[in-house]
Amino acid sequence: YRRELWGLRPLTDFWRVGAGTARRLAELGIYTMGQLFCAALAFSALCRAMGQKDELSIFTGSLVYVFSGYALFTAAKHVYFITYLVLALPLLLLGCERFLQQKKWGLFVAVVFFLFLGGYYYAWMDSLLMALYLLARELYLYREDVRKILFDLVRLVVLYLWGMALSMFILLPNLASLFSSSRSVNLGEGTSLLYGLNHYKKLLVHLVNLDPSAQNWAKLGLVGTVYLDLVVLFLRRKR
Image (tube, rainbow, N blue to C red; front, side, top):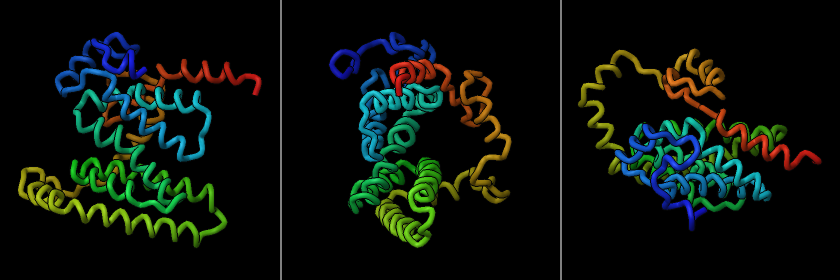
């Protein structure tokens, strides 16, 4: 893949990448699959850290992750989305796993630092998804040991605050500019950190739907990747 397809142009030669998406990606400086490949590589590393050893499953999961409608939609919106959301999220979760399994904290702190350099907006989205992941992980592994769960989460919070503190030279000026801009008017009226209930209903509706009218980042568009899942199920039919 890296030798023959990483630098292939145009992007429209790839399945499910239309002319509009390719044009928008080009405007943001994304011309080849090499940039999307990095996101798939991060996802693959996360799978291996979680104990997955089957290469076909890892490969399929990486393709589903990178070529889902949501990943392509966010990448076409702005280059920051593919860098700080699609690429950084699996790296952040990988940092969690490396610390919880091997007590190696460097990657986790570095990714948190990197996220806040990109802005509080992306750091908040990734942090919220990380919190949901950690909650599900800890309850699944240690549901009968509440003390262990709390101990793990407290240590990660401390490391998270450390990474955040390292980025203060960028984060504080960004926050200062936010409160001095026109957006601060909306803050005074009350700003919700979460979407309304209707948004989460849309996520279910658009799970396999390519409806272009889906708003508020509900364009999951996983229908195209279902074919990959069918191939894997067929190959594993005897199991």
